[in-house]
Amino acid sequence: MTTRVKTATEIQAMRESGRLLGMLLSKLEALVEPGISTKDLAVVAARELKALGASAPFLGYQGFPDVICISLNNEIVHGIPRADNIIKDGDLVSLDFGVNYRGMITDSALTVIAGKASNTKAIELIKYTAASLDAGIAVVKDNVRTGDIAAAVEGVLKKHGYGIVRDLVGHGVGHELHEDPNIPNYGRANTGPWLKAGMTIAIEPMATLGGEQVLLRPDGWTVCTRDGSLSAHLEHTILITNDGAEILTQRPN
Ligand code: MG
Ligand code: MG
Image 1: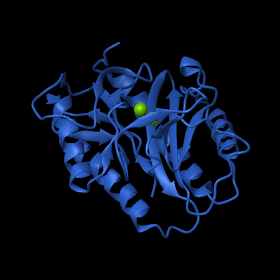
Image 2: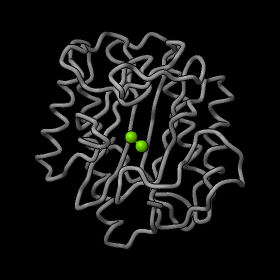
Image 3: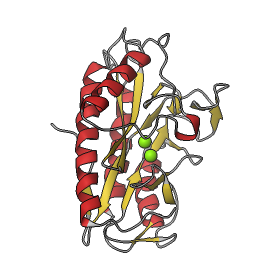
């Protein structure tokens, strides 16, 4: 389905959904440290979500087996939490999580370094991928085109020489986890579908320290960089307003 202009009631539910998601991602980020398994993090995510009276849109989505995607280092997205996947010092850890609250879905991701962050290139990759997300959000307003957002994201990532993952894209969100249209992280301004105030979208740059080619692991889910380079993934669900954007998945400071 194509993402709809949401009603006031739906927007209020999405604000609540996004607030819970931002809070939970903050909590999980604080738990990322050497020695914890990706499954340990997923167990906390599932428990906290349930305690808040929300549900997990990722669980069972096209058969995905958990509530959260956790992807390490050269894994870009869709990593399946595993008890034997122990996070090590210096690992790049991407947490991609979703919340369904009162029927409205929000989607957000962050990348953080576990333990001691000494790899300057990895630190910068996260920093500038975040800057590309900010740049994409900054051009959003009523009647923005998907290409405008794409070009803004691409501009920042290109400037820093990062690989831009093309096989995975942002999307409309709200009633379903993935709604049309696609919001790519590369493209030309003044192209693509128009977006209206009241629509909700997920912008999610994925960048690598190497090339843009990806590889699907035999588990059928985990998407990795083909050249083994590190990657970062950041995502916010936003509400398009008349003159800008409201970030629905902002994390508490
Ligand atoms: Mg996501
Ligand atoms: Mg998404």
